[in-house]
Every structure is written in structure tokens, then in C-alpha cells.
Amino acid sequence: MDGNGRWAGKRALKRFLGHQQGAESVQFVVETASRISLPFITLYAFSLENNLRRPKSEVNFLMKLLRSYLVGNVKRMNDNNVRMEYIGRICELPSEVQDTMQWASEATARNTGTTLTLALNYGSRSEIVDAARSILTELIAEAHQRGCSLEDLIQVDGLEARLDEHHVSDHLYTAHMPDPDLVIRTSGEQRISNFLLWQIAYSEIFITDRLWPDFRGIHLLEAIQNYQKRERRFGGLGETFTDEDLDTLEPAAEVAEEIVTELSPKQLAPR
View 1: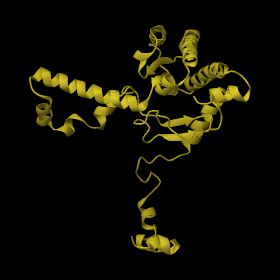
View 2 (view 1 turned 135 degrees about the vertical axis):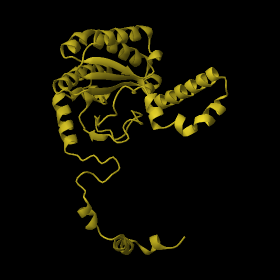
View 3 (view 1 turned 180 degrees about the vertical axis):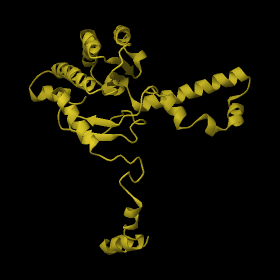
View 4 (view 1 turned 90 degrees about the vertical axis):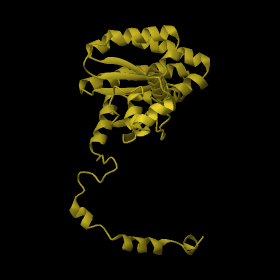
């Protein structure tokens, strides 16, 4: 959801008007996701860094806009069978904002279509830290219950049995969600910006120059269409790569020789 401020700046408008227009884009995109039965969509609405580094007046406005969005759109979410959820350090948000968020979540809890997850006061590094703290807290509690030290508890089962990728994933904010298939980055930005660092290890990335306030359902469909043309390999060779393809690969020695001939004498000089 990047580009609200730039959208306003290009039109000589105040930043808050860009944020308001960005909120409109949310509903267009979510309703399209619902129509195509997209099971999950997560929007990076407000980062931990936004909360710490943006002017207080802008943060306050964003909190008011969030409450207004939730109150004004719950009926539309129910009409479109959309369920509301959140990830992030929600407990650090203003209490009145938390109350509205809880109300919207409960009001849409019975919906069975698209799950809209808003990442609020969210940072992926903080999420991983929180997961590590949660795992450690659970281990300490279990050791206390068994009447032994944490070191003894780990020695009994082995560290590998107590801490692996599955344990970390199960303690992230997104433990109830599948990892994303596609990350859409608006406004031409070519960075991850501390978003779902663990979860998007093998996600496809689609970058568009379109600013978020101009992003609509049709642009979501364009991104999905682009994604559908890709072959996801997850570190392998892909389904279209066969043993016959392997036989036709140029021998490694010949490839190495070709590379050497392209290098300059300076690059070949021994160290």
C-alpha cells in the first residue's frame, strides 16, 4: 500500500487526502479478491517504523482513518463474505483503535470467504523476535512444570526437536495462515520493507509503478495473471525440467573454459 503521500504530492494536495484515497483502494481490491474467491489477502497498512518515525499528527490521522474505515465498511465486508483479521503489535495501538478493531473482527468472524488481514504496527523483524520470545517463554514454563532447568529440558529431547522451522512458523503472527504466493509492491519500490520476511521466502514478487491510491481490482487481476505465467521451483529445477534436459546441458568443464576466456588477465591474476 505504498504511494499515498506521492499521490497527494503530485496533485498538490495534503498527505492526508492521499491516505483517504488509499483507504478507498482497499475496498475496491478486497471486493475483487472476494469475487474471485481469493482465500487470503494481507495489506501492509501501518508499519512499526511508521508509528515510530512519522509525525505524531500523521499517525493520529491514520488511526482515525482506520477506525472510520472499519466502521464504514463492516457491512460491505459482510455483504462480500469477507472476514477481518490483524497482525502486528496491536497492543501498542490506542485503546479506542483496538476496541474498533476487535468489534470489526467479531462482526465479520462468521464469514467464510476472503480473509482480509491488515498488518498494523507491524514489522517482520519484531515478529520474529516476538516468536523467539514466545518459544523461550514456553520452554521455561515447561521446565518449571517438570521441576528441572531449561538446560536439562533441552538435553532430554535435543535442541533440534525443540526448535526448528516449524516451531518458528507456529509462533509467528501468521501461524493460522499459509505463506503468501504473491507479493505486490506498488509505486515502483524494489524493496521488501520489513514485510513478512520469514513467510515470503519463496513468494513471487510483482512490482508496479502504479501508486496505491490508483490501484484497483483490475490491477490485482493483472498481477495474478502475471503470477500464473510463472513457474515456481522452490529451489528445484521445476516441473518442465526433465532428465532429457539434463543430458543436453553443456559439460561443466567446457562452460568453465568459456568463462575463463572472457576474463581479463587482471581478473585471472593469482592472489
